[in-house]
Length: 147
Image 1 (cartoon, rainbow, N blue to C red):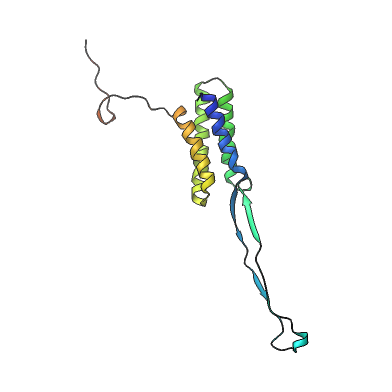
Image 2: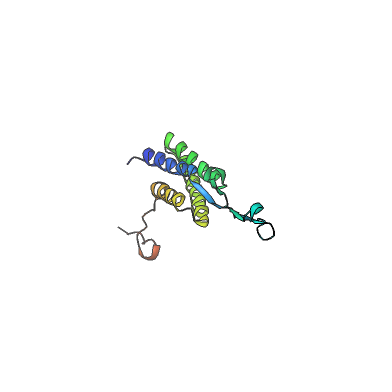
């Protein structure tokens, strides 16, 4: 897969979660008490339960959206420009933004968002943080050969 394709696919993976549910639940219900305990049978109004209403908020409404959009913009910018040190720094900033978003998603328990972000990071991190080969043990370089 080419570098621009990887960057664009990672940008798409950063934008995709904006439509996912970030948090949700159901509000607590309540009981409306009737008057059957003290009125006659003809006028008796029974107790009834009013269930809670479901609610949810999307990722596009949560604070994580800032980091997702920042990462996506950085990846698109890098995919559309010639590779330079400046674009490498922008891509690294995008990776850091995606990593912060992944930490927020993990903290919130949003697994689908987390999976998208991990996929984007798997695509981009090897491009911008390539390890330099260092020969020798324990990261210590070997002394140069004398010829």
